[in-house]
Image 1 (cartoon, one colour):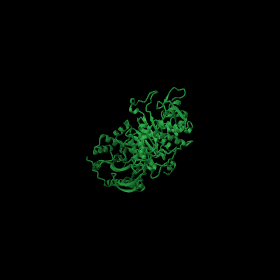
Image 2 (cartoon, one colour):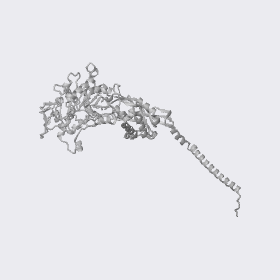
Image 3 (cartoon, helix red, strand yellow):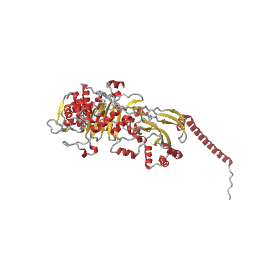
Image 4 (tube, helix red, strand yellow):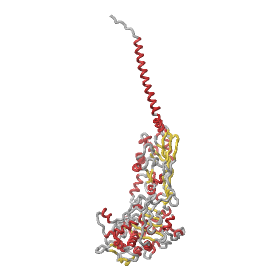
Length: 631
């Protein structure tokens, strides 16, 4: 039996369709409500936030590095300047795969593997987010063209024109002015991120470092509009940077060159001061180096050659070289003896060629083994008689000796604006107890009296001690800056003058120093024969290696670098001091024979005119205090 055919219920189907349409319509309306609500939330409620975010994606604030202050010598000769340079900068956040970008840069510019490694090292150094990092400096026109042609392959890479530090005098002032270099990660943590935004170099040594805040200036800004690729479309607003202040130094390039020429390529140091005000007229440390490669980034090989050189060209001998002062310290010891009353102007000591402590067999030898007979203070300075100063040091004792020499700057930093200066060493009882765990022995006092033993001084300290004799105890701390932004620097921590009970003692010691260069038995009279001005000086010879009791110095048995250092200090004109000089010639052996002619050449260059005669302004005696006050 067949089943009956069911008829289709159109009414039911229509009802089902209507229900489904209603549900779909409700769902669509609900979704539209959600969408409209979300749009309302974004467009109305969060309008300010998203408009600012959008503007930040379009408008960027870029720092403008200030022009660094210039540095001049006292006559206006440029020592440190700024010159334009085209640098290759990479912004890592915009470079995508920055390793690939570096590979492309190396390929485009045909760089070596070492150059490629240097680029990566610079890019990895600490920097602020989205800050362009200069990885190559001083691009050539060909390199700039290659980058421009391949720009589409180099996202985040830009060629930027910037000012780069330049030292036109090369190595003449490398140790005094110093140099700039790239900011390292340690420095980045201590620097003000706002003040140094856009700046990638900082003063590393010398004047460049000490006066960094003055030379740097204030950063500027500009708001720029960029496209989706980060390219600048237009400048919306600009705040100009404020350049750093210019600095005029006390140094004189002509005297600097004369000092270098006088040293003749030998290792050593020279400092020339104006005793009236502490101005450093010349400051030479040889050998020297060219500071310009340090600005843009010196190669590993070039730096290793400088660092590992046996002659140590990077070492500032003037400020950090520690040498036994030898007999150059005797004028200060003489002042100590006179002012303390231990000796008088007429006090004499018999010199048989040596000195012995009571009940001690050891003989402390005079350099003149045959002795000078009866020696007074004047003769002792003229002849550099060791026996006299052994006796004087023994009478003073270590406590008074250390106190007086400390007043002359031995064992302390003396400069106003040279942060690298070493304090040297003025040993005493407490120092030996702390460092050697031993008591102080009388024999150690004796050898300090002739500038040997534990005592160490820098050439700058010896020059300052000499300037104090020239200025009759008036303390003017040595300084390199003559004017900063047109204003003279002020000493915030002046050192007290050396006041003697009898001011005539200064003249007595200075007369003995004059006899060194002018007296018939002066140790340096040969070097100053025919001088149109009088020089008050003192020679010195500092031992590098000790000599046993009873032995004589034999240069033929010593390595050249183990031979004695030659020193000479002096000021001139003796009756109107305008320059005080300290000369140290490493392993030069003879202070009178080697260092004294160097000092004579420096003083001639400063004091004499083209006709070889003393300049008129140096001929008359002028009260030092009045001159210092006028200047």
